[in-house]
Image (tube, rainbow over all chains, first blue to last red; front, side, top):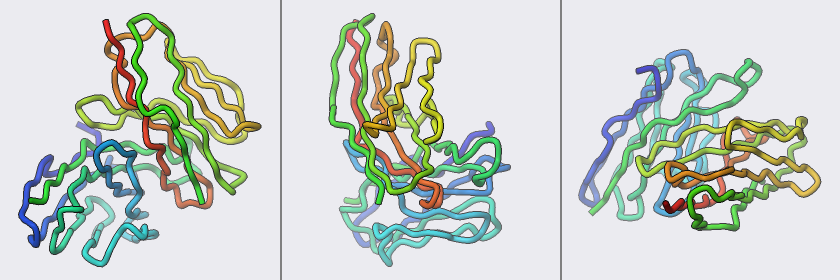
Length: 117
Length: 115
């Protein structure tokens, strides 16, 4: 399978607990993105990496959220002290950098659905 | 700031009907890219098409066609002879050249195709 993979696919947690999600991008893609999608809405951008550098963070990414991409390959998204409002689908996408022949087309993973009780 | 509006939240058609999904966008960038994604019930976003702001040619791919009109900031998507398998939520998205490649999505249009 050469697509974007995410783990776990579903996570149920109690309010106040910490959770961590993992994303494995398409291997040759140097850009990796995190989005959040709540029920009935379009995905909203959270943050993105070029290789291991985190280049942009949305205002949606509160200080309880942290994302890493330590070796420029897989990425993790951690949410500390989860709240019920964090319940959503967390989507990961990857792409090549602009300037290549496949300019900024993003390929999405299946998502991690988080439910905070 | 970037914004994408999909005014139709839900559309229901009978199989074989043609259907057009509307998308209107706002951006200050002179170079930008527009996208359509499909999200079937399984939940995974599937890329359908990308257009850049310099290419206003309409595009047809099988039963799908796209009408990009810069003058009205619209990028509409038409499905001809709809099929039940087309039932999904469709998202229009925008990426400005100065937006770090991030996508701004519209709210989506849920298409239901009934047999």
